[in-house]
Amino acid sequence: MLDAAAQALSQMLSPPFRTVLLKSIGLALILIVIMGIGLNHLLTWVADTGEGWAETALGPNAHAPLAVLAFVLTIAASLGVIAGSVFLMPAVTALVASLFVDDIALAVERSRYPGDPEGKPLPLLRAIIEGVTTALLAVGVYLVALPFLLFAGFGALIFFICTAYILGREYFELAAMRYRPVAEARALRKRHSGTVFVAGLFIAAFVSIPVVNLATPLFGMAFMVHMHKRLSGAQPLRIETERAGAA
Image (cartoon, rainbow, N blue to C red; front, top):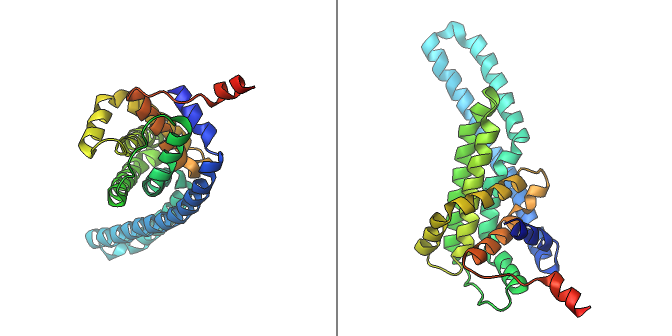
């Protein structure tokens, strides 16, 4: 598994990956801004709605303190979205990965597994469905973990573990679906659920690093292509060994 992660990292700046890297970073930046704005509006709406409900329940005398509280919560929500952009990255990278899954996987297959049959391109609709589903799950986990992060301090750990599961599942299934029907890909993931979850911890750690996490789709997808190949019995081409032999 460490070797698979190292191989994925070593390929990220290779020529076949550079174009995909630039496109995925650009799209990720656009999506993170859109999702941040949307989440900010949602939290602001919740604060305003809560203020109205509380004022109705407590009476007009509570208007002033409730207005102050709502203002404070709105500011806190805005700062929380900005500071918590790292928590939105799993959702963003899930969407980005669904659009570039075949470009990334094909580059890995051709460079590291040249003797194996190449996977079939994933239908765009299926890839988008997988990406949107994973993104919604990640946002849901973020909203659930947020109160624990603010008040109990366990939110970061909860989110990290859930992110490992969610992204590990998505990237592995996307890699497997290039070679297997959807049901078979999911069955393979369940059969190796422990291994896939541990691999997901690597992706969760990667997506937790600010700025670097913009490249998560490339790392996550390349990593899980290697994991799927190894769980299927394939062995990667050792580029370093070949160069040493040629020398």
